[in-house]
Length: 311
Ligand code: ADP
Ligand code: MG
Image (tube, rainbow, N blue to C red; front, side, top):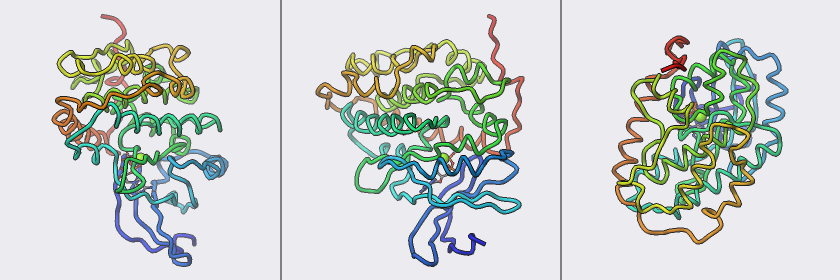
């Protein structure tokens, strides 16, 4: 039994579908993170094939997959252990943040996505909780949970992504009652736009307490750059965000195109962003509440999540 090969060494965190433990391989004494998923969350038959694809992924900014096994009740994913915690927890401690720092993060994210997309993997669940940091030293990103959407049953996955849709592309919400398998890599690029937007001003482009309104604003890509918070931010940065928050997935920037955008290639603005710190602190608190609220216990209500298209 492979589980016996590991010493469980405390809990690292919990998500909607899983509990993550720190573990030590008894033989090699190496440390890993072990993600334990309830089998009920997964109805997929071809797990093994998916895992083989995931195991081949190798990139400095992506959490690598080490081993996989299952029992009658659980699925165990043993992955690279990263020690820097969640990106947003780290940056909210910063007194100073500028476009230059935002760019360092976004660039790594784009490079890891360019890689994933080139090997045919769509992440599908890009959100701050999956942007981890390799270590405590610097802002080296470790992208987590790519391919997880392939392991989880579609309805289970949709339940949580649509329960907290702040990062979800319009075509995903549009397709809520259809087989959610047809998405292209463009869904990831939408999330990059949302993440880049938040990194610069500290609050999200789409936000509403009313989930219906939230769905509507996402599906219409209706967002703006409030003057108070965005007046000191470069026009290249705003243009960069616009390139992702485009409803038509065919018109949305690809990772490759984005890496050539002037915001990433020209000299960055390094003036501290005003209001940034207060905003991001507020947002991290809101986001924690949101994630808790829409945890595994949520009974997905399709009617509620179904946006009203008229009016
Ligand atoms: P979510 O991504 O929704 O937060 P997860 O089950 O993916 O849920 O992870 C729960 C938490 O466990 C993460 O937010 C993170 O803090 C921690 N975690 C996940 N993977 C790792 C890892 N490879 N190394 C260290 N910590 C991890
Ligand atoms: Mg995760």
